[in-house]
Image: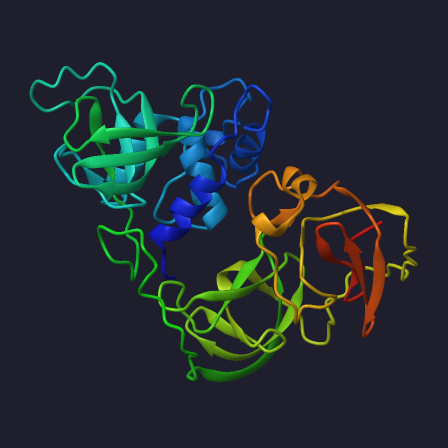
Amino acid sequence: MSYSRNAVVKQAKAWIGCKEADGSHKKIIDVYNNHNPLARGYKMKYTDSWCAAFVSAVSIKCGYTAIIPTECSCPQMIELFKDLGEWVENDAYKPNAGDIILYDWNDSGSGDNAGTPDHIGIVEKVSGNTITVIEGNKGDAVARREIKVNGVTIRGYGVPKYGGSSTGSSSSSGTSSGTYSGGKSANYKVKINTPSGVNVRKGPDEDKYAKFDAIENGKTVTITKVSENWGYAKEYGGWICLDYTKKVTSGSNSSSSGSSKPSYKVGNTYTLQVELKVRTGAGTNYRVKKRSELTADGRNHDKDGDACLDPGTRITCLQVKNAGSDIWIKCPSGWIAGYYQGKVYVK
């Protein structure tokens, strides 16, 4: 699997502003607590210090636990990075975006600091001699900090083994606009098996090929070509990482529910049962809207900043369209799938 620094930074940025004051930090703790295996079997409380859990939750959300360990303890994080051969003890090391920085507030700046770490964060970027870090539980919130390279209080760095990413930059300018034509022939179905869904790309590498669509959790697609751990999703005309899918047993059509087809009416209010993308038209062939294109109320119901309306969001039906056997609903922010491939997503 190819690991991307950009993905880690992007997820960390998505949680900026989550805080204890309004309870929005709880979703980060929930990501940590719902991961299996739970580090040392300890389930965190919402009142616990959560800086290490924040870093762990980012790793879990990205599917990167093989290179960024999960823990709720800063000292234990160091030991785990050492076990992975990813620990850099040199404070003067100039980090890259996606590196993990640990602090010791009792560092005097004299000699090599080998004290107990107190805090942890994710390097967002480095400009000249200034490091910008995104941290959980900074002032009881996810927020940024700036610190100088070789600054006092730096304990050291976890340096994950990102594959295929350039060092020293969080830019994605190396992505290709072309389409990959290789791969071995295949013919089977997979079900998307990750809460955040999977991105669809022009080729089988997240650092080389830009994403142009996404597939929601629970959706089943047909794989017609494979390249290592990537598969070509026939219905979307692009490549997805198979690490986030589950192969469907031969003969199954993946429709796990016998849900009756709903009848939506203009003017009625309905509730989203799952997180849903918002599109510019009624069908998956229409573009997914950016967060900035949602209404203000829509953005208020997108707590994790991924441009999707959260489960439990109540919408007013403005228009209904059938697309084959699927039913799409127009709400103030745009078009959402009410009934899709035999499943009811809006009730």
